[in-house]
Length: 625
Image (cartoon, rainbow, N blue to C red; front, side, top):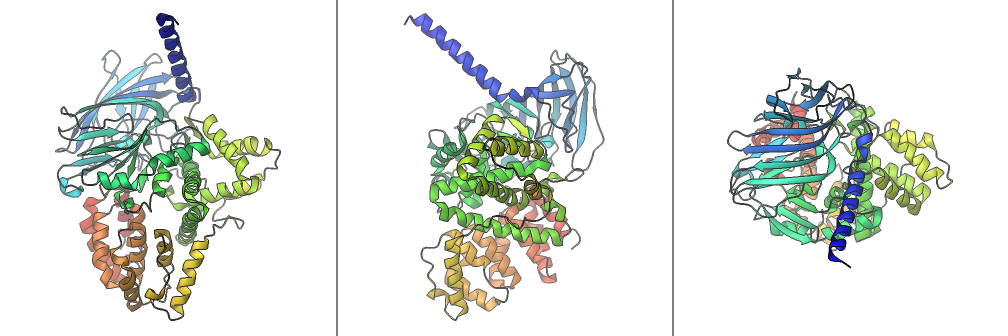
C-alpha cells in the first residue's frame, strides 16, 4: 500500500476512534443532572465540562494557591454560574479574555460551605477562578515528616468524597456532574505529585508535574498526593506507589493485582481507565481505600504480609465499574455505588479464590450488618437503615454505614438467586456499558431492572419486594444468609474450649485470618480477663499484625477490662487513622467511666494524626462525655 495512503487511513481511523471515545465518555452531555441537595450548583443553567488547574503546594503555609479554569456549557438564558466552595479565599474571576467577571461568595451553610456565584452571559464559555485554600481545608491532610513511614519529608493527600472537593477546588461538587481535567502542579523539589489522572513514575528535578484525565469524572474523584514516593510496576497496566521503605512490601501484597483486573473484565466488560495503580498512604488516611480513577488510595493497614486483606483492593478495583463508571446521582443514592461494588468484589474474590473463601467474607460482612442495624435502631436512626437515604440538611458522610455496602450487596444477591447468575451477569454487563459515564438514581435503576432483566427474560418483576429492600428499614425476612462451612469448623473448636480443652488443644494450623477474625468475634460475653489472658498467651492476639483481627481483639479486651492489651490499644489508636477501626474502639471505651477517661486521654494524643473525616465522627462521639 502507498505509504501516504496508509498514513491517511491511519489518521482517519484515529479520528474515528477518538470520536467514538469522545461520544462514549461525554454522552452524558445531553443529560441534565438531577438537583443535588448537597450542592449549590444549577447545572440546568450553566454546567462545567472541563477543568484546567494550575496550582502550587505550600507545605509551610499548608495551603494550595492556584487558578481553576472551567469550560462551560450554558443554557440559552444563562446569567450565572454557581460553584461550591468551602473556606476558599477567592481573589479574582476572569473570562477567556482576562476580563474581570463579577462574583459573590454567599453565606456559609452547615456542611455545604458557601456558594460562589459568578455573573456570566450565555456566550461565556470560560471562567478562571484565582484562589487559595485555607490551612484547615477539610479535604487536605498535611503531614509532618514524623507522621510518615520514612520520617524524611512532609506529605499531603486529599480526600474529596463525599463533598470535600469544594474545600480545595471551587467546583460543582455533585456526583451527578462530570468533567474532564488537566493540571500543572508545582511542589517542593524532591517530592513527587500524583493525581487521579495520567501520572509520572519518577520524581523530576523541577517539582513541576503535569496531568491529564480524558475521561469525565465527578468532583469527588479529584485527588492529589504529594510526598517522597517510589513506583514499582506490578503488571502491564498496574503498579504501586509508596514511601521507599514501604514500596517492596506493598508490591508483594498487591502481587495478584493483574489477575484481579482480568477477573473483573471477564465478569463485566473492559476496564475503561487504561492504568490501575495503587498508592499506599501514611496511616492517617481515614478509609480503607478510595477509588480515585487510575490511582486508588489505600491504607497501610491492609499490608498484613500474607495478602489476606486484599479483598479491599478488589473492592476499590470494582469501583472502576460501579461508582466511577456508573455513579450515584446524589448521595441519597449512595448504595448504588457501594452495594454494587461489594457484590462485584465478592464475585472477584470467588473467581480468584473459590466460593468457600468468598462466603467467609460475605458471612463476616453479614455479621457486621446485623450488629449495625441493631445499633442504629437503638440509637434512633432506624430510617438510615433504608437503602434510599434522606440526607438533605445533613452531612452525606452520615450515609457511610454498612447499610449501603452490605444491605445493598444482599439485595443484589437476592436478585441473582431469584433470576439466576447467568441472567444477572448479562444484565449487569449491559447496565455498566449502557450507563457508562452517567449518573444513576435509585428509581432509574429500578426501571432498568424491570425492563432490562425481568421483562427481557419474560420474568415477573416483584416491584413490591424490591421497594421493601430499598424504602423500608432493617433487613427483609427473606434476605440471603451467607453460610461458611469453614466458620462452622471454627465454632466446633469453640465447643471444645467450652467443654474443657485448652487453647493449644485446638486445631487452628490451617486457619486464615478470616477464620481467626470469626474466632475472636465469637469470644463469649461471660469470658473474664483471666480467660482472655489464656487466649492471648496461646495465640498472641495483642501482637498480631492483622488490623482486622487486632481491632476485634481490642474491642473484646476493652469490654473485659483486659489491661495487658491497653498499651497496644493506645499505640494502635495513635498511629492508625482508619475510621472503620477507630469508631468501634472509641465506642466500646465510652461505655464505662474508666473507659471514657481512657478514650479522652488517648484521643488528645491521637487527634493531630487523624483526618477531618475521622475527627468529625469522634468529636461528635465524645462531645457530651
